[in-house]
Image 1 (tube, rainbow, N blue to C red):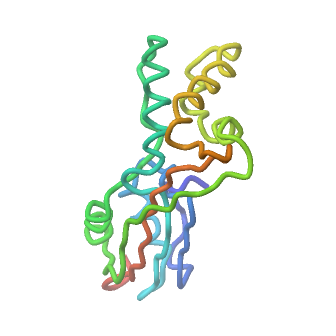
Image 2 (cartoon, rainbow, N blue to C red; image 1 turned 90 degrees about the vertical axis):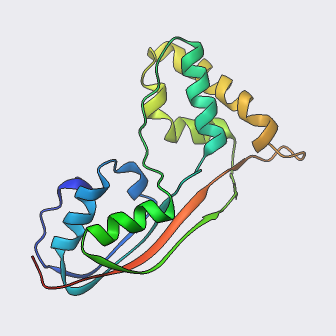
Length: 171
């Protein structure tokens, strides 16, 4: 089900999300749906990409698209802790914890593999025959910052972790 169009009504005591909310670019709708889905006093807890997440990769994706004459579009929602805290509060939640923290993460394979999995919103702007070269160019641009001396890749993740409780009566 689309996270911005949740159809649940007071059915859950808690909603937990891991590594998904940054793909949902209508955060106020997501928060409103979670609030509706929760019973009185329900908890909303999650972790997702926050401000600065995959900054090196994102810059390389956007630069490579621009070099090809294509204007990139923003497929992700990477808020600051303050901005997301304000959204939660405005959406009827009492925030008990929120933090933004870097979490550089080693990859089990190459950055090319990661890009094949996660860069679709960028690569899909190109003809299918151009995508492999695009991904190779992006990986090459990222290598100075994300490839270590031993040949291991890591991703410059920044995570936003929060815990909040539904305020007031069910609406």
